Amino acid sequence: MSLDYKVADLSLAEFGRKEIQLAEHEMPGLMATRAEYGPSKPLKGAKIMGSLHMTIQTAVLIETLVELGAEVRWVSCNIFSTQDHAAAAVVVGPNGTPDNPQGVPVYAWKGETLEEYWWCTEQALTWPGGDGPNMILDDGGDATMLVHKGAEFEAAGAVPSPDSTDNAEYKVVLSRLQESLKKDSTKWTTIAKKIKGVTEETTTGVHRLYEMHNEGKLLFPAINVNDSVTKSKFDNKYGCRHSLIDGINRATDVLIGGKTAVVCGFGDVGKGSAESLRGQGARVIVTEIDPICALQAAMEGYEVKTMDDVVEIADIFITTTGNFDVITADHMKRMKHNAIVGNIGHFDNEIDMAGLEAIPGIEKIEIKPQVHEFRFPDGHSILTLSEGRLLNLGNATGHPSFVMSNSFTNQTIAQIELFTKTSEYPTGVYMLPKLLDEKVARLHLDALGVKLTEMTKEQAAYIGVDVAGPYKSEHYRY
Ligand code: NAI
Image (cartoon, rainbow, N blue to C red; front, side, top):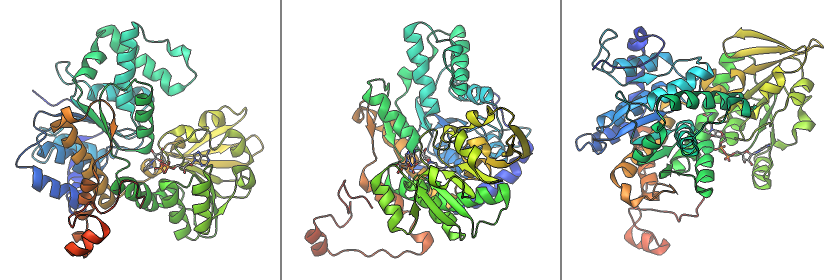
């Protein structure tokens, strides 16, 4: 059967393949996982639907899952984050050609509309012949949400009208579900029943999973990959430290040194983002709602203020909270001329873009794709990045390979866990065992020339751990 897919341009595959080969060298965890599990193929029989930024690093993850025996279908989890050469290379595959693609079905391109985005998500959840996946690998929870909402509305016998919500994106979700249910009234229930589990990449998606589980609505087990130490304390922090300024630079090329930058939120992403801007010589001010994180920011030497205190004086504003309406339309009205406003949290509602566009008399001018000037009626402007969506992936290429190797090795191990030990995971949200977290870190040490000290048996007994780990208690916070 010929491969089904929709990407921007298969002729980009050769460029994509060259970058994938460079990335493989920088992803020692994933390559070691291939070497360890490739021969035994623990994912044979797994049909994995992935919804995660379709980048070069993700290409290495996809091809690792395939090497471990899985059948895979993929979409991006953001309308701007696809790297078209990566998508093309994955479709063509290592042994195919653009005329004879032999890789993995991908439905993703940079600059999808919301309608296209949700169409793509449904395509990746639908195997040829109508069957669904038995595993989901999610980032932000959109694929998991579509399956759950579909099943919920099937049980209720109807999909609510898109007019019942003011949320532009949810309107699109409801239209898509109305359409799919017209064709098959049991599609999502059937798919949900066959899913053994989901592994979730990010803070926002994990938050959604715990919420569904607490409400008794979760339909299958989930592994929270985000809170593996080797994920959130590395990707969220050091990844953003790298990719935040990359995004700002590529978008605006403004000198960051000497500017006043506000980072909203001082969690893992906020810590990396503040350091990223400070590293360029910006004067960084943090906003926080949590006294512990606010105190941490102060101890790191950042001023901690409220948005109202700083909205008129800062040059760059970055949201990192996973919350909504953190920067409001009123804030943006009050900002300095050409202040830069961007978000590095998962969803675009951290900045009230809808409220900004609705200001009477406001003019939206595209400087280039994903960089917009909003000119207020009084003549002053602000610049928004990636229309409020995560700017490190919209304006740049996201996190670099080495840090993503940590995250994606966790993802691969989590997929193997849930797929091969399904009966050990009743519906609920789980974390990977600490020993596996330590294993992920261990796989990345050699590449950096790290020499680990080995304890003596006596030392291990003295601090009450095993020589081979795990080395810390579950409540240790790193
Ligand atoms: P976190 O929970 O560690 O940090 C969020 C912080 O924001 C918390 O300290 C919280 O107290 C604070 N906060 C909440 N509401 C606030 C408000 N109104 N004003 C100021 N501060 C507020 O979460 P983490 O891991 O830092 O993730 C943040 C977001 O970034 C999530 O949406 C996550 O999915 C996303 N993410 C994005 C990545 C990227 O590459 N762009 C990478 C990893 C995560």
